[in-house]
Length: 420
Ligand code: SUG
Image 1 (cartoon, rainbow, N blue to C red):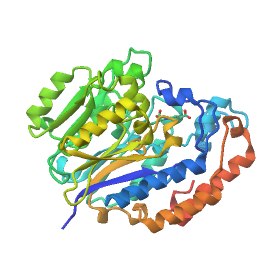
Image 2: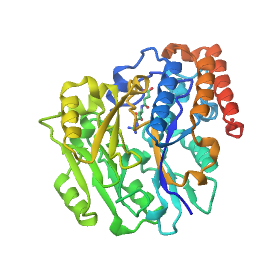
Image 3: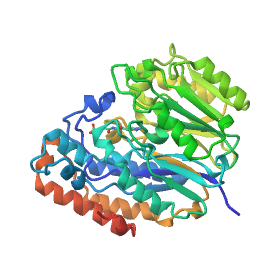
Image 4: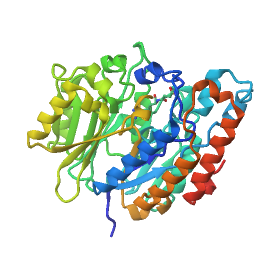
């Protein structure tokens, strides 16, 4: 008997977390470029979020940070860490794999023709610092989801089609274990900022996963949202079970999309946040949609696990308070402090990859318990750098510290095979 449920796998924030301003179109990344980062505090904030989720009765997993700086990437560019130009060095050092929502797109077993859960690793090819994540991510996912009777881990979609994974994918279903409708959100190039998700990549993922065509929707993200700084769909929309919670300006052809959704999934409950209550700018600043919309156990309804920035924005918070008072599906608001990640444009939902499966089928080394999180927090407290300013990335002492820190973490989690 399998017990299918949603598991959130969070990327543990790596010891090289820094603010190098690498992501054009990501307002927080550009605004904080050059600031000092606090990797230890960042990782502890992420761990506290996981602890909170376990406290809510949710299943929780984690992924290891990737090996950074990526020496083989830098040598493939014909240079060395010492000689590289600062933007290349920073790209090699980036801790961006923390944003696990960009690791892969997941189709749970009930949606797939062969009855297995399919994962396609994202190529992340639009941003140089993210384009070299996929080999490490692929190895890690193949380890965590090694049971081939139940999981298929695909290599990324080929160039030139950009794919940014689950951040541009939503699933609606009557309950997690039932077959769902999968929504792929893509962008069109032409605006001031790159559109990172190409429709051809989304279509390829749907085909590779063996999804039924009448249970898939491809929808264009609004050009206005991308131009305002919503570089992924999960900055302006989130879904869980039968609920879609989205900003009025999230999609290019909203009414057409809603009509298709209602036709394919009549039970859909669509909550549209009007722009005159919460502007697109407030939505992007507060990251209210970059919430984990989760189903609480024992009939507790749904909760939004949001960044504290959402609470600090008056328009956003008063809208949310009215929403939960209204006796609808969303009943609770749980703010969490992930400021270090937020300063690079990554909220609570960016930090996690949702996988709907039976936790027993996952390699248990990737499943979180309060005790394991204590052990991880101890390693972080002892080995993660307290602070990094981008000009320190040329410092060889920092390099040794970062490499040692990751090794200690792999060791405590019994995952030394991911070394290198
Ligand atoms: O890809 N930031 C990430 C944030 C990813 C957020 N993920 C989701 N929305 N799911 C990005 O833009 C900034 C790195 C820097 O500037 O140093 C960065 O990569």
